Image (tube, rainbow, N blue to C red):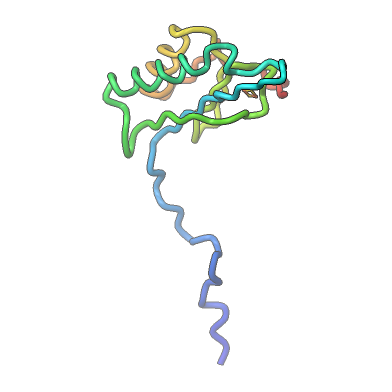
Length: 126
Ligand code: FES
């Protein structure tokens, strides 16, 4: 008797992928460098993160099944910084000020519409 074809191996990918815990997840690079190199922290990334978190909460978007705002270290796209990325769409934003953050919250995080004018140029990495 051979039942190896009917028993999944430990650690194998499940046949059904469970629903995402969050509808959208936005990560802000808050990386700070002490060696003089440019970094998102020098462009008010912390203030943008705080603004986004507050706006998401105020809009009633925070929590399971909705939106999560998270800190991240360097996302390796420093040349386009400050940057944030939204999943599951994997949309990268380069923002400047709080009005940009408000637009990302209202348009993308709330209504699923990408903010074209803030998209990170595809060629910019570190
Ligand atoms: S320092 Fe922000 S992406 Fe690298």
